[in-house]
Length: 504
Image 1: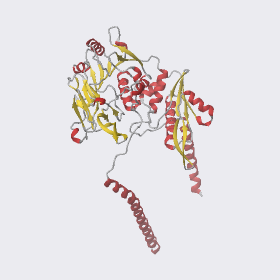
Image 2: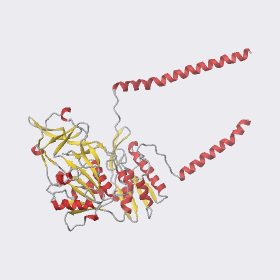
Image 3: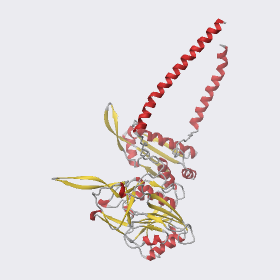
Image 4: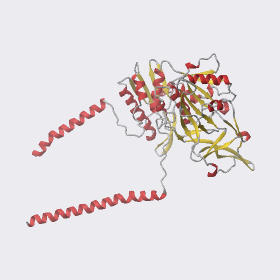
């Protein structure tokens, strides 16, 4: 009884400590991040954006309730992210959650704000039911608003939220020049790219002539010229780089004409201009065992059907440099790309940004496309052919300049009309990352690909699978047996010792 009285103050002290910890936890939010990519830690770019807020930001999150666990996790992750923003901003970023499905008024409010509902499959009473769900948010700042219509599971939530705040708070957007006049795609043919670039920049059409002051553009984009570029325009680009300008070049050295089953070289003068700077782009087609498919129409009697065939002339690039432009990218789909190499001296820095796989090759123009060709390992004798690179230094003059070259002028172009197509997310990320690295000093480039889009489990050999299966089954049983033997032996020792004590 006396010992219980002595322990009572310690229990009371422990209870008081636990209560104090709970109170502090409610008032001060913090989290320790053990993930490899620090996905739950706000980046320096986000801290910079939050620390420069002049007025409070309010985030209204429209999330449906009673969602399946895999979808409901998006709400939990987003709420945790908002708590981080609120804590880091010292209360300048506030938020509220609204359930649009509660009543028709809140649902209409979400729709009017620009939140797009999605249909998800759920099980209710052992039946598959389709439900309408809302997973979006609206950010308000100084009477303006920016909408995140849909937060996809595994997406870069921090980038979506930070860039939305940045778009509302930025006062003077840098200008980006999209070069026109030599057969390049128009701005409206880049809807996915422009949606991303318009967050931080004003993209302007530019025609290269003496009346245009190129120095006002943070970066110039030269994408997919089809016509020959006059020497005077290339001279203007030289002068722009000589003053420390930034240039993104995505162009075709070859033309794949599927309707004619042939591939030919393209000469616009840009290949010679780049060669003078040490970047040699071959008039060859890159082929890769890792590639996209094309649809082959076949006839069988009165019936016709389509067959999907691997087409190595459409490489899927998965090998990237450890660089901000390509960090986080997983797969970029190219069409009719060419190999490139750097032949310049060490006064300039050249970094290969993207390469083909270990099973790749190249074919010199002209090329005949044999759709029914059976590709084997012998068709891919090469590896790691460079298809995109970065050149930095005093390229054409006294000032340091930066230039990114990608040997496919169509990989980020959606097109227009009936030929328009939706592009993979990493194609857009690659293009926009390149512009960001050349132009932006906020560091948001590191956030665009922060998030998991695909992390397949590593394949395990059958022998190892069997070993792990039996190991997991037998190890617990063996441990229980060992513990039982030890416990029985221990009781036996105790019994013998008591008998010896009683005998004495």
